Length: 168
Image (cartoon, rainbow, N blue to C red):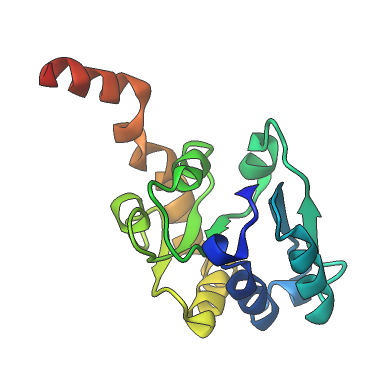
């Protein structure tokens, strides 16, 4: 969720991997939340890939957390990130993540097979495989889900404030 910009978020990779995965056939829907200049291109891509009925675009939401909390998992496919807050917010909601290992951010947050899955960037087949893994391997999924909240405690306001006090 956030700004929909193809040059940053690489939603084409997300849609192609989702289509290649087993998720559509299992009735697992994909929700893309956000606004931006590329929304019309996103809608066209959904149509071109014949994913209507499986992929849904929702406009910007002031509070996306009910969706995040109910999600099976969150997926990040960005070309690059500064600090991918969406991953921390998802994990804080107890929702594990699948993310590409883009420049800056995900590998500092995701502990592969502990709180989520981290895959090489720009690799649609490995991303599709990771999406399948979270639906096929219940033990791994439950492990990542169970570790999600604790894995981001270091980013809590209390911990960050304590570090600032120690620094100053």
